[in-house]
Length: 404
Image 1 (cartoon, rainbow, N blue to C red):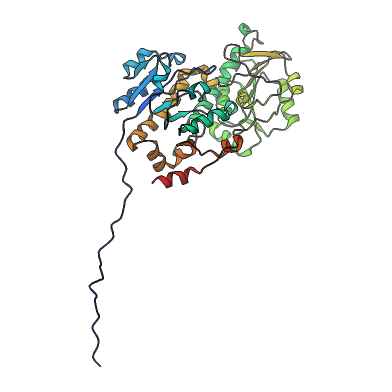
Image 2: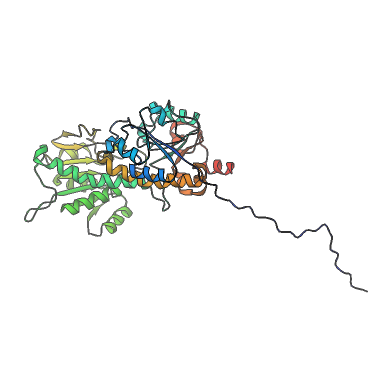
């Protein structure tokens, strides 16, 4: 039997299918507004004149409210020379598509908000109100928070910088209040040849604790650190590279050490919830007269039972003849350094936003930024805020995917 030839039907087509690639859009010009902060004790500004100069050179437009940089010793002249436009009316600043603030969005700001704006600012959970969130949702705002913004390595760059400033500042503040001029004990932090070193107790081995320890050791003090995380204590030991006295938080040991110390630093972080109180009133009452407590944890309630909030204008009070310094937002007292640190993070982010063609595209291409977005086009994308205020939560990844 003869072999049959294969039949090739003319209806078959062997053309390759084209592949669709995700092509990055062309960049867009950003209109950035920097309002003057009216929130209490807020002296920082989120973009320095140098950063504004870079943004303007890249084709973006920056509007700054008059005197916005005064707290950090930046004048209107500094900003206008960098290429920003100075305005005297808050409403004009809020006409910009991108608003950059160093303080949280306030009720006063809400009346100026425009639909579909993009806001970069801190949240400050303890003072956040449901009404503010609802007004922002109503106006379809996209909002990025300082606290939750992550970089490529998965760290929170702004929180880390502010913690480094607070930690370094702690020892400078302590030495100030131990001096005779401020009715302190008249003790020099560190000590000199022939005199035993000053004793410093640090509760918390996070970034604040690490930088407080570094500064105290550099001044020549004797440092003892308490934390309930062995991992954090080991990491701090490795980072500093000097053998330190470390311990878990055991009340009897802690109380005994506090009795003989000159400076006690509260540097516990609680990850958004109230800081646990680990030093009781009884422990404080047994401390030496004239010793100093600096409670950095006061932003989240404080870890000393005797702590209560003070201000930059009236920073200390005495209880059991122990000096208490309990100012929230310590970095604001070093506003210029803090402004530069924030600006170093935000300026590259804004440049990238412009290059990628807006925040929607940046969120699509840079996964690490998603953790910082708590509102996207009016939808609440932060689970903790939705739980706290009983508002509808929407997954940001689903929102973004549905828009592509």
